[in-house]
Image 1 (cartoon, rainbow, N blue to C red):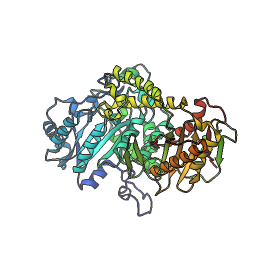
Image 2: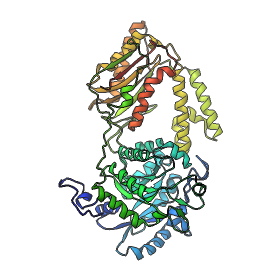
Image 3: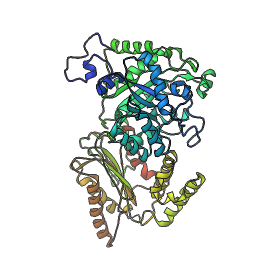
Length: 571
């Protein structure tokens, strides 16, 4: 929208604001990138979705009929070149000045196939002389590592935008829509896409049943944290022959009104970074498929109302965006009570609380792998677990691996995956994710059973570990909290550059092993050589891990004096 009054006198605003726009429109972005008009042409490659074919669910998304939003699925399907030519013939009537196009793999899940098939389809689209790039719509749970590697390869050759169908951050809403995955799939996809040569955009739906205004704005804040390159926004609308159509007809679901949507979408964009491209601000469907709400059929009118709301408030995209996570002066944090309360087992320091930050998918990430993968990003909060050498006896490992083999067999998968995680690359993404969740649950449950000698139950030995971790606090790193359990340790902290996780964990393990072995008059390995670590993805996950550390002793049924818990004061 062209503003009738200046947004500010500052000279260092993004180009879109200097041009008088209130948000970073996709049209503006493409002209910046290519120097002329570029439009998308829809392609139907014949894919399905994992919540349609039964892999993670059946019936597809509650609101979805692919024909209602994709022109390519409403027509007899030609080959890729033929579809592009058909689309260009139609588009010349409306966009006579446009000579270059993005081939848009739109309906269904366009990475849900073997890599060789995907490569061939993408190549066919790029072979068209008027195609200058690709846009690929998919689900965040359908981009295994080999697909991301393929996408990165194409991103190095041409413009590529990968659209992840996030929809919302609220798992209850994803369950309502029969998505078959949760928000952790989006976080995982962003983690594994970090540093790749393609742009990432996210779909978000406003007006989902049961979501409050605050719930929708929480999705905006998470998008800002994830730092996607672009976002597509639209209201929940209803088309025929869907479960949603039945729910609307029965009065079970009420669709969002235009006034509420306009105000919400402006509130939403105020929270998004000014560098994030707004690829869409509303959605509709052909009248033959459409049920409601009627107002979204007039996309021009919706845009004018959104523009007018920006103008009325004299606001803009990013006005209230704050991309730095700061975990401090939190009501929950200030009100929390250590467990247990005895001073011999709980410590707390009243030092200035640092600004803990979450994983940045765009920043440099150091990756290494031994038996476990290790990700490290300077200045980002990380959760670390290390355990004693005898904490997981062979019979315990065999017990939970047997449960894993039974699960794999039930799902008609290779039971060897239970003991060789490298074989997970051959497992469908959704099942691999479910397997990891089950494995993590069994592993942590077994750890909390406190197997082995559990010598860290002795306060003087637990204190050796606690003192070692606190020694370089506020110097090499900033601690948030830790707990020393009888046979393992959890710690939540953030490293200060140039110090690294790998060096520091090695130092902790060597020093404490020598001290504890000397106290016990014994020799040999004390710790399992390789710790587990996890970069924190969001403020919500940071809070979850704080609570996990605090509650771990009670979940393991430990008595006061059998563990050491420490946290940094909120003051």
